[in-house]
Length: 238
Image 1 (cartoon, rainbow, N blue to C red):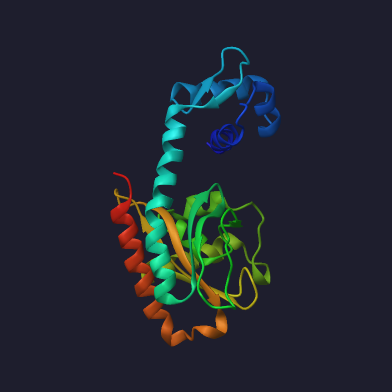
Image 2 (tube, helix red, strand yellow; image 1 turned 135 degrees about the vertical axis):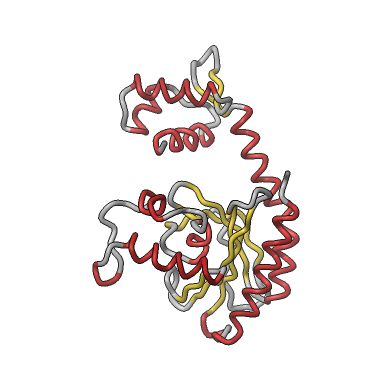
């Protein structure tokens, strides 16, 4: 599954297409295995083969997924801008890609001292609050599979153990939060955004200088985030 997902990302990122030998080299597999994987995703409409160049290009099913994400960003944009105005802080929309939380859109807050646009930035999913929200639907085994083997947290404990324990607490509270994990002096409060089927598809987070939002104001900020999340869910393509 990991190789198939990596192949899909490769095909979607190469406008001129991906040839068997290129897929083989990128995935670290034999050409016969790369060819079999390419045939599999082609069978499911995720790729098409150019009859002249023999390269594989994004298929209709993959393009539909991309269009759905673009629609989400387009529909979420005014909600996030309103949220940034209401909280007076920068807010982001992110999605899970492999083991990374990738920012799709940022609405910046009005303060001179603020977190800037992070669109396109990818952060390892275990490093911050938004990444943890994207894992709310993952069971313990799925979380372990996402993390590199041997990854250790503070004190040398396995990172997966610490992340799983934190996720249990986050799910219970309905949001995730961290102080200074990704950037010193910067905090993040985040909530998941569920799709029309109830599964987590995105996350939204508010980033702010730690000193500006004291702990007693965090519940109010989370309530605003949850309201924005519900508004985005109602706008998602059905």
